[in-house]
Amino acid sequence: MHIPSSGGSTASSASTKSFVSLFPNPRKDDDKLRNKLFEFLNNFTVGSSKSPYYKAQISSMKIEDNIKMGINFQHLLEYDRELAIALCNKQERVRQFVHPVVCKFLFDEKLVDDKEQLVRKLQVNFFSMPKSIKKVSEFMTEGGGTLATSVTLAGSITGSVALDAGIMIVQRSAAELFRAHKEGLTWDEDFDTTDMLVVNDDEIRITMTPVPGKPAQQAHDLHKLGSIFMPKFIHNGKMALYFSVLAKDLRNTSEGEVTEDWYREYIIGHTTLRPSIVRYNLIDRVHQACEKFCVANSAIYTFLKESHPFYEDWRTRIPSDSSDAFYKVYWFRIQPTAGVHNLAINSDSLKLVELVHLAGLRQLTIVAPVLKELTVLSCFLCN
Image 1 (cartoon, one colour):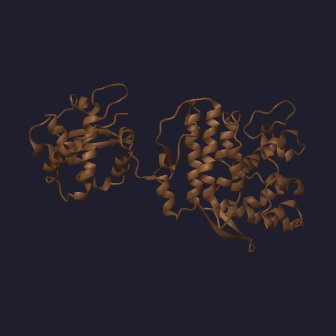
Image 2 (tube, rainbow, N blue to C red):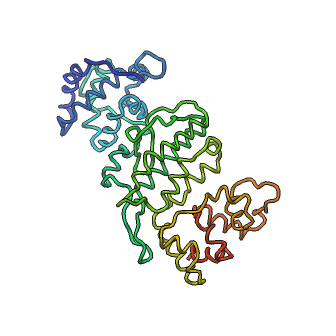
C-alpha cells in the first residue's frame, strides 16, 4: 500500500477549488476529503509497481459522448480507510463531492483542455462500492455500547438476551474469518474492532490483509473473536442467554477443529446466533412440551427456570452415546463412520435431523432422553 507523501495537501486544496465552483451546491466541509481523494488519484500504486495506477489508466481513456472514469473502491479502502468510508456514505452527493476532484485530475493530466466540456461529459463509476459502511465500534455505540438487553421469558424468567445487531456482528465476523481460513490465510489474532467494518448493515469485513498461516494461528483468530465480543453481551451483570456456551466454544477452538467444515458450520449455525424470535419460540415451546408430558421436574425444565448452565459438550459426548437422537444430530451432513446408521435411507429421520441441526438446537439433546422421542418435540417446534 502506498503511503501518501506529506505536503501534497496544500497544492490540491487550491487546485480543486477552481472546479468546485462549477458544480451545484458545493460544501466547504467536503474540502478535506476532496484533497485526500486528489492525492489518492495521483499517488495510488498497485503491488510492487511504482507508477501511479490511475495516471496510467488515462492513456486508455477515450473521449466520446461521455468521459468515463472508473475507480476501484477496494483501492480506496487500501489507501485510506477513512476516505473510503466517508465517500461511501456520501453517495447521494457524489457529483458535488467527487466530480470536481476527478475533473481537476484529468485536466492536470491534459486529457482535455476545456473545463466546461469536462464538467459536462464526465461520468465517474465506483467498482465494488457497497451502499453503506460503518466501523464496528461506531455500530455498537449506536446501540448504546451494549449488545444485550433484559427480557422476561415464559412469564417468570428474567434474564439477558442478545440484540439482533450483536448476533449479526458475531456471526458475520466468524464468516469473515472462515472465508480467509478456507484459503489458508489468517490474522493470527492481530485485529480489533478498529479494524472491522459493517458493510451494508449485514456483512463484516476486516480491513487488515490476512497472511498465510497454520491452523494454530487460525484458532487464535477464533479465540480473539470471543475475547473481543463476548464481554459485550453482559447486561446487568448477566451474560446473554446461551452466550456462555458460545464463549466457551470460541475460547476452546483447537487447531484440529478450525480446519473442519463441520466446525465452521457449527459455529455459523450456533444456537446462540439464531434470530432472537427463534430462541424465544424454542424456550416457550419446550416449556409447553415439558408441562404437557408431565416432566416439569426434568433437568431441562430446571435449566429453563433457574438458568442452569449447559451440560458437557455434546460433540464429545455423542460418538460414545447409545441414544439414537444424539447420533441423528451429530451425523447430519457428516460422513458416517462404520456402524453408524445411514440416515439417507430414512427421509423422515433426515428431515427431523435437518430441522434440529440447522436450527442449532443443541439443547434438544437434553430433552430427548426425557421425552423419549424427539419427534414429539419437533411437532411443537413446527407449529
